Length: 381
Image (cartoon, rainbow, N blue to C red; front, side):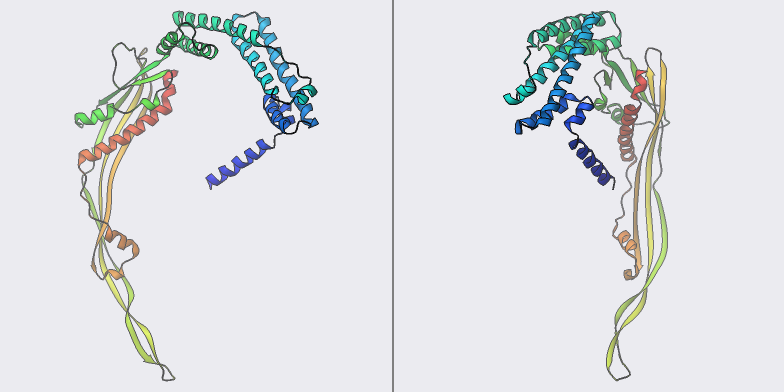
């Protein structure tokens, strides 16, 4: 039902989008969307006057928006304006190239005049790169971790301006290293149970790579030369294993079954057959097998600079072995379908303690990853 509802909503949204006219887009200020729609329409029907009028309006308003923004930026006199200036000139140039694909009669009708933005784009590109490079270097040399992240984004902008600009690649690596929070993962066992070494290793080797982000790096083991900002510590507080449990339930089921036919004569002397029934019963013993291992632990999110625990989260995992089967004495035709199912179930061997713990550890690792993913923001406060 939920999938069906989502599909209906998607169709409604798609229909609404399809029904949005260029004129409505212009009213909402979405000029470029309107222009693209109108250009495609006028390529097919170049004499459609309403479309020509709307295109002229959209093109003028879109260009005005960019030129006004460029003027505002230039009037500030600030050195950080050039990337935005560049983007606005690029927008003007791209829009012009879209318009130029129209037939000449349409271009004449909208009073199109081609502009050469090349020199403006190149000038803004160079000035933007100079500022961004100098600003990024200053942030890297004088700033903290947050400044390094800002520097990284400034340098990434340069890569959109030039494919090979000075030593941007070197500075990007430096900014990434300096701006990254390195997080060490640690496991310790404080339970009363002595766990085999390979159990601890399985917990320690949890795959945290899927949680890595651009400026967040998890390490299962400390690496030489790496300064760790945070530690996430998993502490095992208890490991409990229930003994092999077996419970039984005995009962009897009965029912009438047909065993043959009886011939008898009716009032007219004709012979007829009627079914013959007999009540049968069966004694049933249902056996329930059960065994479980449960691991309780908690995760500490620790700031290495302050040595404070930012948050403590309890976690646990349980591995359960459960099996149910039945034996019967008597006529099994008296048994219900549920009992027949149990009669077909096998008696199973109880799993070893280590196997149950191993399974619980795998489940615990999944829980740990989910908790870290959910509560990772505590490391950024």
